[in-house]
Image 1 (cartoon, rainbow, N blue to C red):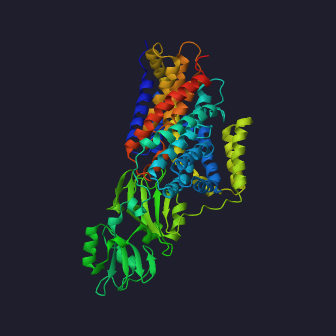
Image 2: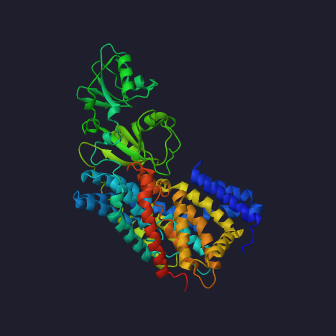
Length: 614
């Protein structure tokens, strides 16, 4: 009979439930929720036993520092251009064959994500995969979800594959006597099995389950269904627009209408930043709905031209120096919760937003006042000279560029490429085969990257997903509170008393895998691992006989990398949500069976490699 919980336990349970509800509802961002948890624990110190000094230890934990350093190291490797060159190589060897393209996507992303942080890998691979889809006359929907899933599977190969592995290692060292954490390649044997089984699923079963949300080989304007929102008008002699500067004429219109181009003879000027004066005979390319175009043309005495003349090719032909660019807002985007008007987007980036895709929904009207969300994909029209500004802005990731003159050539390999790769290998090997912990080798690697000019300090700081860092630092004190108040032990007692006699130990390992993976789908993998591992270890320690708690830690660790069933479960899932045109249910349809398969495979693998009962 389990005794009733103490007041301290009930307070910690209340904070935990409140945190889970906020994670689920996303009333505020997860990192803000985590910081709110930290503050609450200190305010409630008489019941939580977490004082201010204990609460801020999350910012100094080896897991937090290591994850921060790995973001910087990954950025240093990415900037060498080697990942882009890999994409170009895949384009050459696949020759447009559907099976080869899918195999190249899965077979490359998985192993690479074991060494380089999987988020930047997916960010770089999205445009490459989209190009491969176009070359192969395939729907990008068929490839982008496997891209995200393969990156998640690859994260199980090494300690540095994902942030959840590093957090689990830190917790294992704290909770299990005599264990210093998880070794660099300790996960690798089971990680290889998971990657092989998951890849086989992605290559055989997944193609039958993934719908073609975006049709193959469409003009990019058709992909976003903007053809009905593009028109050209000719300026008559009597038009009141004649004699005005283009930017002045359209700035104060107060209409849901944008000017994209001013065409005069064979010369094309790209709006919005042009000081060209509108003259009679000029042709203006406009973005608006049909009713707005009709009203505007009538009011300003403009003659409408045949609408079918405006296509993606006519907007992005190489001689025009204008480009159609698709960008996605990553989970860490500062644009989340803002509107285009509040961001002064058009003026700031010299680019016009033509449409916004949110999953399978596409929005064309009142774009300036529509609140943006992480995962949204925007179709932009801009001058070619403005593209570098978009590429360097950390709040957007370019996923597609449409040019009449063919695919872009990848950047040349940097002279720093061998140096950056050598530094990354040294970090991994030193952590695996010397007494130096991963946090020290990772920091040493960052110093080496900066000193050798593979990356400068501002680029290193910009590479860090600070929301993940604050999420981790804020949620770790809750894990501490669960331990010091006995709340984790109480939950473990409940599990043991209700299931120990009816469920074998390996079945309990599977149970914690299932609970952690389900939790990871609705909050974040990092938070789910931080909350579940103390309870899992406590359960192992409460079981009769000699039970290895490390087996339970591994179940939670691998489960944190299998948040396949929702776009919000893992940040790479959210990154492909818009470019693939997916619906929320697509993740459940494709990811649900995969998650169940890996539940069985991982549990059996743990039973063989790390038997919970000796």
